[in-house]
Length: 263
Image 1 (cartoon, helix red, strand yellow):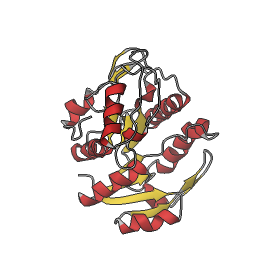
Image 2 (tube, rainbow, N blue to C red):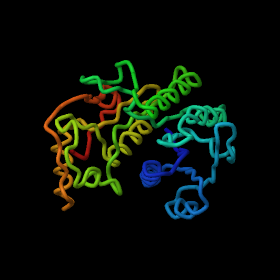
Image 3 (cartoon, rainbow, N blue to C red):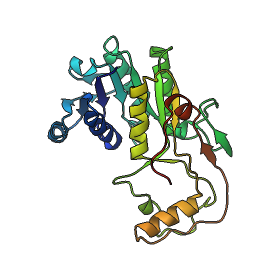
Image 4 (cartoon, rainbow, N blue to C red):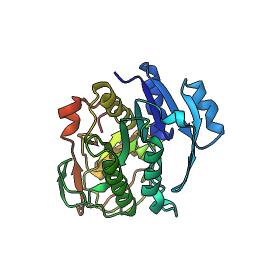
């Protein structure tokens, strides 16, 4: 039974996960890069660590990595000069954690799949067509090199939830392309639930696509979300161009997880 968890990167997802694990009785270490957030972590009974790192160096207390499980929750910074340094940062983190923790869970993205007009699951080949998708795939491959028989990856679809109101994503915009394409999204509550289920069941050593089983069209989903928030509705073109539907075989098969938030 795992009791101590370290979460590298207590941002929008990482902090929500940390709070949930604390509520469930886990001892949680949480990292931040800013002094201002130290108090927030402490107030939520998360043991705070100030950790800064580059592709070459990590400034951190070694004790942070001495946990039974380590979540790496630092997405690459899109549209940033640091984007291409992301795989090297992951390598530096894994070097710092080497010999200190045996279970590492990397938060990745379904952007590793291209829009090839088909359903994709964990058995499909990856073929990212965006820079961010390419660097997270490289990060996955580095994790596999370090933990060839026991790597764990969670590929999140688009994350929505508190402070990420999808009604605002396209509010008031006109002639939006690809309106009949399906969406691939997951609510923060289910993202946290899947991560916790991996710990509870100790279901390590595989890749999990984490995406809602609901796939309404972009038009239906975003218009409805705007209406619910009383925001100006977007207008989509009735067309279906490039698309994919992300499904998971491993979430139901190994976790038995039931999604809580419908799209």
